[in-house]
Length: 163
Image (tube, rainbow, N blue to C red):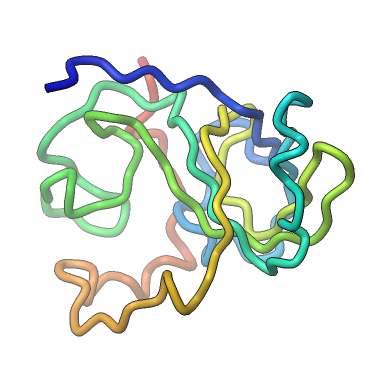
């Protein structure tokens, strides 16, 4: 069994969101919000052929999230849910994932749209978004079935921020 895993950032995500509070909680609620991803120069060669994809998956570290909890009150509900039944930042391993539009690549900088990520967030990985791989029909979305309609109006209220 592995006791410890160490990841090193490969870049930094830049966005107009300067703190968690007020940040959209999903890319679908951050429509047309532009940002950029500054890949560290030593990883630039890894961008070869990425420009052919309309969307990318960013995997990042929630560097501003507070202590993890197994039961949490998510942004779109007043009931506590298990951390693995929600997508917020206060997790045992504070890893985030966003599917963003890729608008342009210039050297080691990727320009993205629909950014729901706080400025300065450490980037762990980039993967191409492939609908044939990534879209799966869902029959239900659990507790979110009755709450997903709230997404457009919900923003981070700071509840998961480091103290």
